[in-house]
Amino acid sequence: MAIVTQTPLNPGDSPLVREALSSVVSRETSATPTAAQTPGDGDGTWPRPAKTRVIAVANQKGGVGKTTTSVNIAAALSMHGQRVLVVDLDPQGNASTALATEHRGDVPDVYQVLVDDLPMADIVKQVPDMPNLYCAPATIDLAGAEIELVSLVAREARLRRALAAYEAIDLDYIVIDCPPSLGLLTVNALVAAEEVMIPIQCEYYALEGLGQLLRNVDLIRAHLNPTLKLSTIVLTMYDGRTRLASQVAEEVRSHFGDTVLNTVIPRSVRLSEAPSYGQSVMTYDPGSSGAMAYMDAAREIAHRATVA
Image 1 (tube, one colour):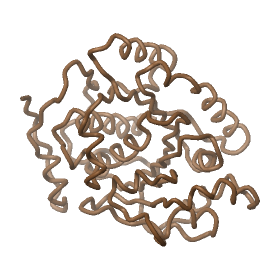
Image 2: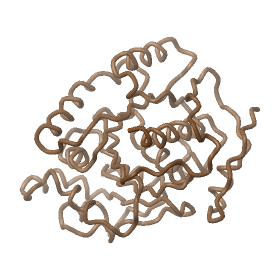
Image 3: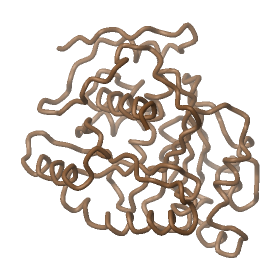
């Protein structure tokens, strides 16, 4: 068991946050590369960005860890002094489930924001026991938004307009969890965002279709959102015991260079279990390899903002 140095706690931290930050932790698996040390690793509060960073987590391939990455990066940032909003743009509502945010029945959700012009402030809820973390939930109604948006004015920019009008909380990060498609919901996310984060599973199939996603990013940059950039690639489901995972990681790094985070996310049972308890893995099992990896990844993202 490896013991890590305790991180200074803020007086306002909830019990779950305090447990996560002060836990004695150990690795679940071996042979998992870790992030390079970043200045300020021991600080309880990471540097805040100069302005709100809006990040769309996108990949049209399913099962690569988009929702897991969105939820756990957001949770890790919030535990270190950042104010974070997760916008669940996937009709399955998995991010809402993981953040213990009600998203069934007649709960106001992102669908009503996009289609009915409901103010974003009317649907945002604080995540239980996470004082700096907020969620805009998605219900199954969002599945019909792809069709209903077609006839609306400025259909590609409706999420951007809703976020621009949202002033209820002074946010440091807005993380948009996209559905596994390249439809109008994902287009809305890419038009609203300034950065794209792409989770890539460490298997060769995961690389298929990546070119189409990058072409869509280029098209949106050219016609709808000139400030959009590919800022981060996260390697997920890494299994250090296989040569294939290492080869895929090397190939992605050779193509995308510093855009790829130093930290890779290992396969972890705890990452799959946490949502069933309405938690991110950061509070469900802060000592697991998945939680430690996402904490390292979030630290990289936070400190990259200071040099961007």
